[in-house]
Image 1 (cartoon, rainbow, N blue to C red):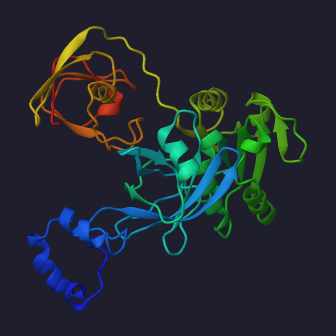
Image 2 (image 1 turned 45 degrees about the horizontal axis):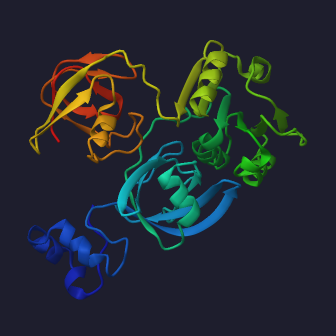
Image 3 (image 1 turned 90 degrees about the horizontal axis):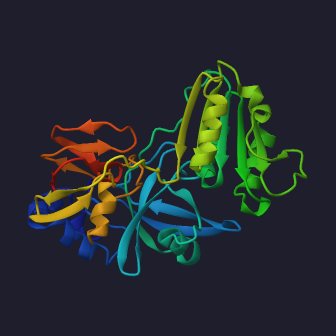
Length: 366
């Protein structure tokens, strides 16, 4: 896509800009353009914070207005947000927590994680006017077309963000399929979007919301106490039900065990970093083809972690093998996919550093 136009007759003429394009690098264009508007760029998706509000006791919602290079998203997807913290650019993945508005603005909701550099920065310091880099949307967590059976959305903790966007998008449909959102938190104060969720449910009989509390007492009619169990999920143990779950790994695993055999379709995402079983021992030699640098790295450790331990900063995003930000070419060597256990001996062009480890001496195009 072309960059946002700059004012003035010379830069406003598309033909003139095209003629100059080979003579002006994108980096130089961005350097001067951002002195006129912080979100003008030749080709980089950027977003400006236009509003901020407290979403829960430990979470904040930020409304972002992207520039024209951002292609939008489907409810349930993620975007990579690039933030400068203490002089370093860090990237983290967030799910929009509401459908986009008419002008393309969208909301993310960030829970402050203890020790989390980006989440703490966004929660404590992000303000209207701040500009962040964006990656294009990714992820496959989405509901099937209408008329395809009842739906159950399961969310815990920060897993509510993609489910909130999906639930709100259903409310815009003229005749949505019966859908229940079950939202689990430890305490009542940690919940986000309570009034918004209840308003959606009150306005649409096909959409219901239930709040599950694991530490507080249930006092409202739409609240329950405890953790996921077979009794709570019994209404959805049906061959026609479609279930989506998002939350910490333990929550998603519990839902899968309870529902995957009883419901016809079950899809889930965990926002916790995957835990890898390290079955390989010893070290191998890793050669970085572009820089000519050679490292000794442990077998069985994610390559992204090994490179960071050596003082390098490869591009990355989700750290879960979803976004492809850390993908690179592997010209030679064997790697193990740490989620599946598969060993790859052939050269590949899209090796994800975050979920692959070195199995033998290895060459990466870095």
